[in-house]
Amino acid sequence: MSGWITAGEAPGRGSGRGRSGLRRLRESRAVLAAAGGLAVLALLAAFGPWLSPYSYDALDWRHLAVAPGFTAAHWLGTDPLGRDLYVRTLYGLRLSLLIGVLATAVSVGIGVAWGAIAGYVGGRTDSWMMRTVDMLYALPYLFVVIILATVFGRGNIAMLFLAIGAVGWLTMARVVRGQTLSLKRREFIEAARATGLGTPAIIRRHIVPNLAGTVAVYATLTIPELITFESFLSFLGLGVQEPRASLGSLISEGARQMLTAPWMLLVPAGVLVTLLLCFNILGDGLRDAFDPAAH
Image (tube, rainbow, N blue to C red; front, side):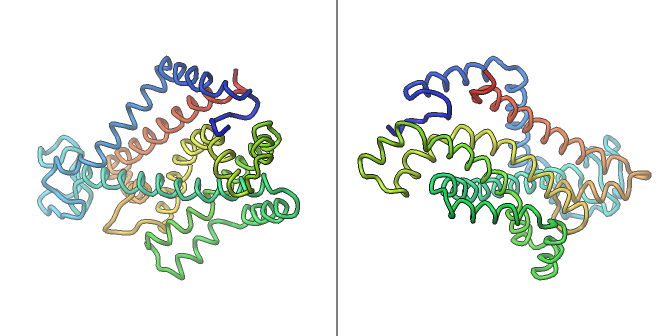
C-alpha cells in the first residue's frame, strides 16, 4: 500500500508510468543536453578553479582589466583590480549553485511538510495554515531583505539563506496541499486508516512518498528561481559581498564596467543564462515526462 502512486492513476500503475516517463526523458535530446550541461557546469564549479594558479581574491597588478585572450595567464581576462575572471566566475557559479540547491532543499522540506499536513488534516488547521501562506505571499520581499540585511549585516550568508528561504517554500506548500487533497480520497488511504494508522504515520508512509514525482519536478524548477532571486539580491548589493563573488555580484560589477571592460559582464552573464536555461529545460522535461495530465 505504500507504493508510489500519483494522483489520478490506479494503484499498481505507478511503476509503469515511471518507466514510460524515464523512457521519454532518455528520448529527449533537449533534456539530455540540459542534463549534460548541468553536469559540466557542476564539475567546473567544483574543480575548475584548481586549473588556475590564482585564487578568487588574488590581485595581479601586472594585468589590470586585461581582455580575454590577451595573456595566457588569465584565460577569460581580469577585472580592474587584476583578479582572474575565470576563477571568480567559477567561484561565483559554485556559490550560486550551493545557495540554490541548499535553499531549495530547505524550501522542499518545509513546503512538503506544511502542505501535506494542511491538505490531509483539513478543516480549521488547513484554513489557518494556508492563510499563513497567503499572508507571507503578501509581504514585500525586498523590504524584508533590507530589514534582515540591517539586522544581520549586509553580505551575511545566513541572512541570505533566511531571506531566500522566506520565499522559496510557499509555492511548494500550495502544490503539495493540492496533491494531498486528491490523494487522501484514494482507496489505499482509506485502507491505511482502516488498519489503525494515525495521521503522522499516514502522511509519512503514504502521502509524502506518493508526492515524490511532483516534488522532484517542482524542486528542479525551484532551483533556477532561487538562483535568480539570489543573483537579483547580489546585483542590488544586498547579497554576496566582496571579496566573495556570486554570479549576481559579478554581473553587477560587470555592468559598471560595461563600456570599458565588456567581458566582465558577458562572461558571468553567459554562465548564468546557460545555467538557468539548462535547469528550466530539465524541469520542463521532467514535468512533461511524469505529469499524468500531459498525456
